Image (cartoon, rainbow, N blue to C red; front, side, top):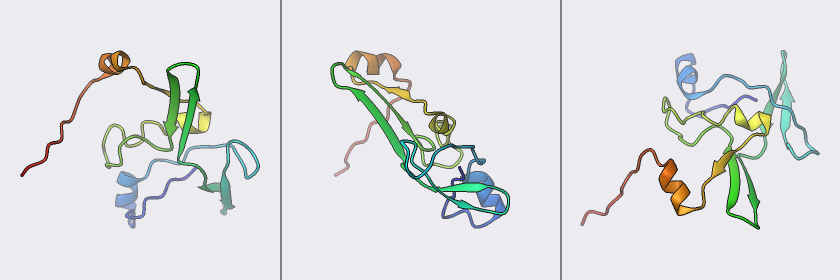
Length: 115
């Protein structure tokens, strides 16, 4: 799987904005839906879902995975932190209980309106 950033127009920009290619199984008619194109050296994934979500409706348990990472900011620790989970079909927990969220919180950002 190759993720291409629209602003990566040079080799230097690609090194910052794009992760290394990741092997990723799948196809057009399966749950791990993918579309691809053939290049001179490999097949490249060109399309598919960007988020996976699984929830147990009988409990407060859910899990999910974004295609690349939580942050869209180049160089941020969370820019590509979920990239290895995606092709492996793995997920991270989505905390729905207030106490669980509070226990797992490592930082907060408070937004306020000026006026």
